[in-house]
Length: 532
Image (cartoon, rainbow, N blue to C red; front, side, top):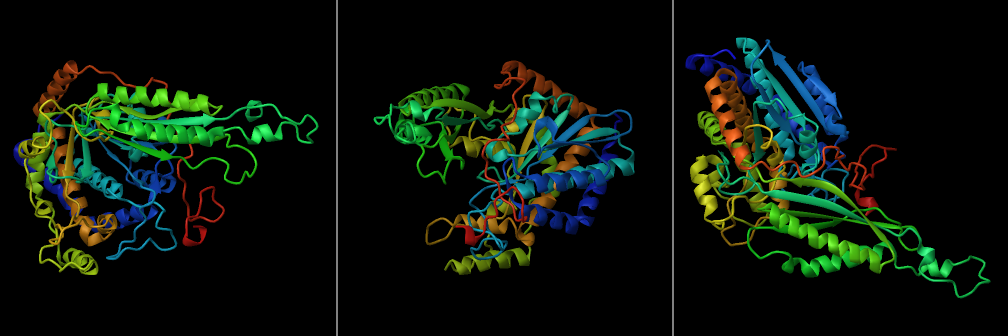
C-alpha cells in the first residue's frame, strides 16, 4: 500500500466527492428505477440484472449468480498491483404488501395492487448509496493512481436475511481487509452515526413443509363396491392444511412461554402461497409455513428452535402428514470494530448530515396537510439533519436495554463481521416529526418519501460520500487498516463462534416465495386490482 500524506488524502476524497456531485442526477434516476422495480426476496431478477449491466459498464468483472443464488452477484475491480481489498454491497429486495407510489397521498404504483411489493427501508436507496460510494472511490483511485481492489456484492433477499450467510460460506468475504455496511436509518438514536458496541443479534428463519403423501391410508373405504376405491377415505384425511393450522395455533398459543418477556426478542410467521386452491375433493398434499425469530443471544434462538421443531413434529403426526424442514437463514450476532467506526464517523462529520431543500419540505407538508395535520415549517425530525457520535448513540441506545444484553434487533450484515473488520453506519432517510395531536403516521408515508427524489436523494449523497471517504482512508493509511485488523482478530478470538449452517448449505430459492411481474406471459403473477 502506498502511503498518502494527509493533504493528498484530502485531495483524493475531494475528487471522489466531486464525482458524486457531478453524477447526482444519474444516481437519482438509478435509484428511482430500482425503487419502481420493487421485486421481492429471491425474485429480484431485473434489479440484479440492472446492477450487473451497470457494473460491467463501469469496468468491473462481475460474476452472475454468485453462491448459487440466481439474483446475487460478485463484482470486482483492481487498480495497480497491490493494496487492500475493500468491500461494500447492494441490497435491492422489496416487501410484499407495501406498494406505494412516489406521491404525497396513499396510492399504489400505477397498474398494481396495494398488496404488490414496495420498498420500505428502502433497500433501493441502500444499494444506490453504496454504488455511489464505490464508483466515487474508483474514480478517485484512477485519477490519483491509488492501488487497491474494490469488491461489491449483490445481496438479495435481505428481508429473510438469506444471502450473506451463503456468500460467507462460499468464500466471497475471504481475503477482504475491511467492509463498510450501510443502511438508511430506521430507529433512533441510530441516525447519522455508526454502531459502537451494540451490534445486531441473531436471526433464525426456517420453513416447515407439511406433506400428506398417502391420504388414502387414513382410513379404509366402507364400501368395497365404490367405483372410485377409497375415494371417501382419501378426501377425509386431515391433510397438510390441518397440520399447518395445528402448527400455527400451537406456536401462537405457546409464544409467551417460549422465552421470558425481555431482551427484545420477536417471532413472526408467514404462510407460503403454495397448495391446492383449485382442488375441490382432495385434502391438501402440501402446506408451508415460515417462522423467523430475532434474539439477542444464540441460546435464546436455539430454545425457540427447539419449541418450533417439537410443535412441527406433533402437528404432522396429528394430521397424517410428514414434515420437512428447510433453513432460510441462521445468523450469528455481530462483532464490533471501534477503529472502523471512528474512521467512518470522521468522514461522516466531514460530509455533514443530509439537508432537505424546499421541494422535499413541500412534499412533507403536503403529506401532513392530506392527513389533516397542520403543516410544519420544519416537518422532518431534527435528528434527520444532525449528527450523533457513535459513543453518544450507544449511551442513548443502552438506556432501553438490560445491562446483560449485548445485541439488539437483527440484520444479516452480522455474518460479514465474522469474516473481516466491519463498520455499520446509518444515514437519515426522510422521517416526519410526530403528529402533535398524537398517533403515528401511516406506514405508506415513509414508503412514499423514499421514492420522492427531493426527499431521498440527500440520503444517497451523504452516504455515498461517507463510504468513498472511508475507502480513501483505508486505501492510503496502512496504520488505520492494521489497527482495524488487529481489533478484528482480538474480538474474533473472544467470540470464535463458527457458521451456524453447513458449508454446503444451498439458499432455498426454490420455495414458494412471492413472485410478481408486469410482463405479459411471464412466469410471475401480475398483481393488479382486477386480480383481487
